[in-house]
Length: 541
Image (cartoon, rainbow, N blue to C red; front, side, top):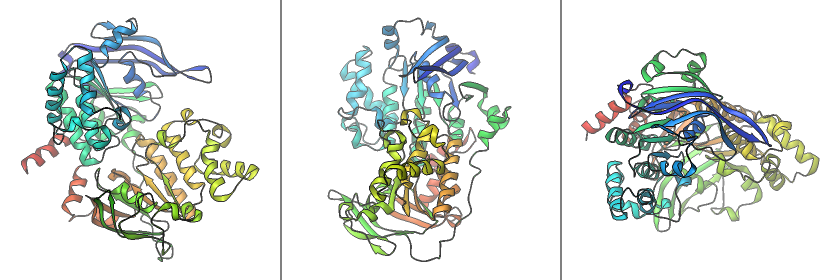
């Protein structure tokens, strides 16, 4: 029982302020927190609740534009607010480690994985370079990474997202810290990879009796990982309880609303006129270099219908999108738009052909130029494709902001850094709509968002589809999203379509074995779910 263990971390009356336009505003408002050695505490809440800010404060750290303005933070008897910066730096990476949401953005692309693993233990004099390399291989093996003896000598871009996330977790364990802050570590992973990463995190925490703060917006995930859950809203605590109590008997109305999200599910839509598809992918085979990565892929997308393309990392989902947009010309096959073959290379497509197919990206943070104001981000495609200028352009930008349910006067002159994650994703939607396309590729557009915000984005996309007769290709690893918004489902594995059909058919057995694997990998709101699934898979070999 965690109650009998020593207290590792306490926060009392924690207050943190954020600065905007030279004005400081309180964003964490008097939070109390206690964490015992070997215990996992889950922090959940919607975007802007203060989860990541509190997690970073556990390291005595405040990100740029923030400051810890009040309260106490004590780690193993050390007052982190009173400690010198040198003392805090010695703790970070050594006794307190941090695992970020995006491993791809956190690793240095110029250095091999094993070099980055060895940096902390060597710098903190925990072990020699040779010992660190041997330890890395051992932890890579424990994290079930492929070729553990060799994978560390690859660069970050040479491994998949799931492998990189596990490598980051191993790196966080290099100094055998007492505390790890996991900040949405599986958000961007497909469900099969997520199970591997969750199992690896749980095993490594158990093996080394490490305490952890697990930050997430995924309630089913936190149910598998946390001993206790603290619910946050706008920098304040809503309630806290042990995980089983929180799941079965939440006290507060806000917590109950979190438990009830994803109720949105639109009915399956019939094609407009039932005629020619907006986009047809016809027996496409594509390669990177000499290696084929897509093999005879075919499917159609009709107006006012959403085709969800699902599969694990490396299945070919995003590569298919690259072929459709002309970024990767296929070796064989073709892309038809309203029945007419498109030039395979985007550079040979007309401006109108380019206009008709737009994309909304997964990570709005990296998809929006941080130096441009919202009017420029939305206005550029309207200028380029439709020739709008001056007052007509300004009017159109304001119309688009209204369409995505943001008040034009409040947002038109903001920078992306002044928006929440959900607001940034809405700007990405408006930018795609600015070209007045018929077809939009939505690439994991809700995976980085909390569930309440994600539901709002799905409802917005559904509303816009009905208003403008849009055809959507929805790339996702989230089968809850598929259930909510898809009309048809295409399941991909190793560059091939293994199963496709209407959503109502795809979620009824019998399934292709790979589809069954995907469906069985979706976490449930049951603390015993992960243990049960892993037990069944190990028993079946």
